[in-house]
Length: 68
Image (cartoon, rainbow, N blue to C red; front, side, top):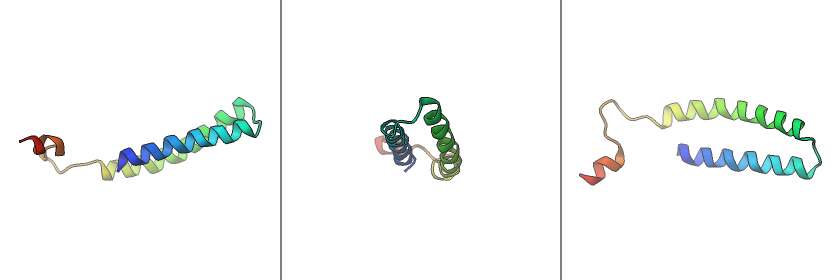
């Protein structure tokens, strides 16, 4: 689930950069806008990753338990 959200963010950033380049924006303006976008998304992703990417204490990773 976290990997999917990171992939979505990757696509979002690259798409936004492409749109802004085609629109003729200056690189400095594009960089500023993308950094602002990343700040907002970082907050959302951090909260999600902290809750979605956790296991109960002492729980083995899924791949390790499947190999036993």
